[in-house]
Length: 635
Image (cartoon, rainbow, N blue to C red; front, top):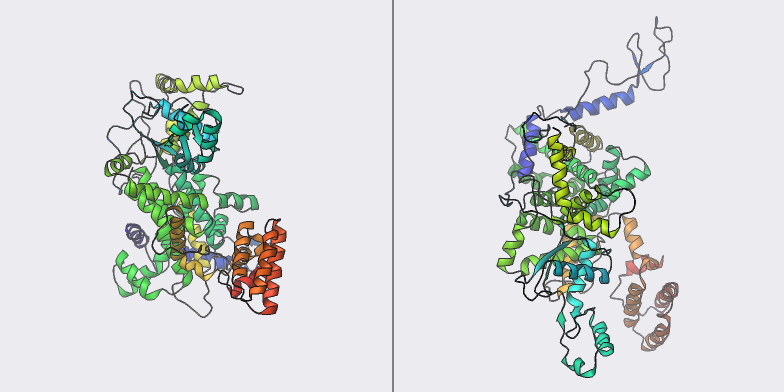
């Protein structure tokens, strides 16, 4: 509601709501299409097909391309001041503070900040020289962390009983299994992953008497695992862009000059987090303005003051266009969740972060994002299951900031900054482990040396200038260009006509179930929760179908040849079990016993054989697939 109020004030403050600068630009574009050329002598306008002026006295002068109507002034968008990054000399005796022209107030000032008055100092420890991409390597990393922190598990004289470990997606997924299935051998203190490996280790390494005395204790019971929310936010952006690429994403990228095939792929993959953030902001602000404009014009006719509450009431009573309703939900729920996540991290506000995670959950669960859909559920379980004292501690370390109350980042991003700092001190050539250890053990002193050197030279540190001058707020020109693109297509007209369809910005038909993505996503979330924890009320017994954006996705999903061997086995098992004829069912079961051990193509052929047999004999009831599903699979 706060964002709606702010944008309403902006639209009203721009002036005449009946015909704004976007309408003027549309009129200019339309004029240029109809009268593309002008005579430079007499000023007569011609269509683009004409080459020369035929008026008397013009002597067949060559026509020039028109830029705007002859009787109108240029249409310009308001330009925003951009800070320039540069070296600056400091007056003698002054402190190294930086002032670069940016917006006067942080966009997150309205969010309550929980950053401590004295910033928490972040120090680099000795690196562990393994790639955290396997169970064995992550066990090595966790043991190194525990020993470095002197956890009681590894140092009986220590008072530290547990520690928080923060990591991004892949290490987090590996750690969730490691924490539950890594045991300590009570004889030799070896860390053994998985119970079967533990039994084998005891049998091979220790005698029978010691085997009987063996007790299973978890190696990493001291670890409290948490996802790095910097990477979590990045994947929120990626999943949102993946969902909406065909709806509006490719149009938005084209408007922002991602025009080539490679540029479009780059934009869709969100390869640059900063550019992706600017794209999201352009979509958010431009689309929200276009959603609110019809209501502002409605209020002007009635001579009423536009308010957020009034807008919500007007939308419920007036808007029927499915395109408008879908874009409204994307802006006010899912993009707003991304904004809230960024704001919560910047201000160390765990309540805002938790709310953003739950708001965005249907996107992870509704589409194919197995890793982060599981992470979302595990994080929700951690937040609800931790004791109150632990929760208070965890809420205080949601993010960390040493540059002000609106500069917070989680530790996964903070460690990346430390890594960048360390690389700056690497000399030419490939660094050895000894070089890395020397750098990390002296990194704090080296950074102090860098800062003092710039100060003594009377220069501001370019790194600090770049940081203070960085803003990823979109340009007004980009927002207005996106608004123009939407308005030219009349995409967000709140009224419905006989030709109104649920379609993308570029005019491609979309699946109607996309309008119910919140319900479908939460159903799939309950099913996934039931798989992880069990006993979830209202969970489906079979996995609900994912959200399809276009009909081609549904056809591809239902195609039996695109399914895994395990999925095909489940489908065939269900078809055989529901055949009415006992003799036919027994014959197929015997044949299926041998066929299911073969390759995937053989399984697909057997499925087609059963399908044809069922159609010919007409004795079947299949619960696992509908008739339409089977028809699609067989095509």
